[in-house]
Length: 463
Ligand SMILES: Cc1cc2nc3c(=O)[nH]c(=O)nc-3n(C[C@H](O)[C@H](O)[C@H](O)COP(=O)(O)OP(=O)(O)OC[C@H]3O[C@@H](n4cnc5c(N)ncnc54)[C@H](O)[C@@H]3O)c2cc1C
Image (cartoon, rainbow, N blue to C red; front, side, top):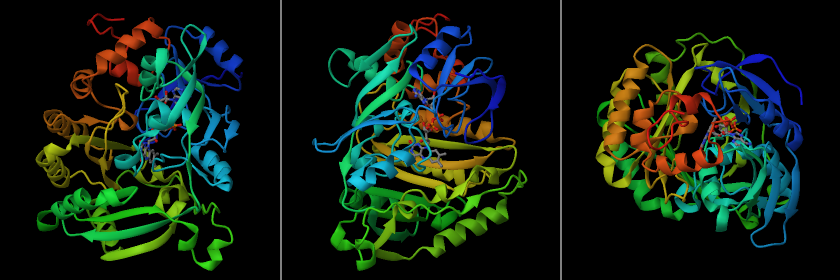
């Protein structure tokens, strides 16, 4: 273990940076030793830093860089379902590349492959298939968790350890450091997808088509225009698809149906000014994106990068927002609150805050985790450059979201207040109860934990 001096850490949004001791962990012994040496500022586990806000940083304390614990430990390809056991620092990119030759597939994929298994579990990430297959934690069978007392405990979704297990799913690294995970896998014949694309006229058209058609597709997501006002507000490009089978492929691709296609277009240089996204560029981008899509196209064959991870083709694309960075606001409101959902969209479009990357999905049922983000409902994500008035605007959105019984996603957040967070997550006390039991002095700690008062006992006293 190499202890490091203080370095600035921030999330993918490149805002809200603070200084932490970033300590590289190469083994379980390293992790235990780092924990024992930690001072009152504590430790936070860190993966690939793809959460947008302050979840994986710990001002004045230690951040455990777990990305070197990146071995695939065992694979049982013959069981049903197949399972894999990995160290928590394995990235989904590495895991997918290793599993595809066996015809095995990671069941839940976020919008980038550059996240660790530990980070995916701690945020309980979701993909385009939440309405069918739930979130990442639904597929985890066991975890090895390094706990605040220095012990490593194996925990599972059922039985004696289930409360700690489900608090760790979506627990943002605050119940301990995940060292190993066993996950169930899916089978696939190919690394391709059959995709239907539809351009929708406005938000009502989009919501209606998704409500009626999503069940026919394993994967569904819409990019929507968050700039155009009036009659076409919320117009979108809806893409939905299913895994392709070998007979669906042209002869050329049948020779290697499981080939992983991941082209790279290079790294974005650090040259962009703060106001790169302005009215003119946002309008031009949104119009071009909308009209470049076909009005309706059925059964197009797409590879993994095209369908899941187009953003991964450009490394460090987050630099486009300039040195001030940006904030990703993702919220969900229950299906029955679709009017509130429309009001939020209207607020965004009319706010003067400009977002080009806007994603809308439908979530299916939640899992048992008290802090997991997905609830059945509409979820919307916008990328907003940091500028004057943004915080106030997001506060107004929060009010609407809370009023509708919705919530904001912690993996994207850097600004929620503790009071608003509590209103959004009604099962918070269950989580705090577990945390009090397994980590009474708050050894696992982070900027997010301090901001949201996750070290405060459920009874209201201060820790
Ligand atoms: C381009 C892009 C697209 C994205 N799309 C989606 C999406 O579609 N759906 C979605 O759900 N998310 C999405 N995300 C968010 C991302 O999947 C999550 O933030 C994920 O947690 C990042 O993993 P990481 O390894 O980078 O973890 P980090 O960002 O380093 O850490 C995230 C959290 O996990 C904790 N953590 C990390 N490793 C461990 C460990 N070993 N043990 C315990 N806790 C740990 C940290 O303490 C922190 O609280 C996206 C992010 C980007 C940049």
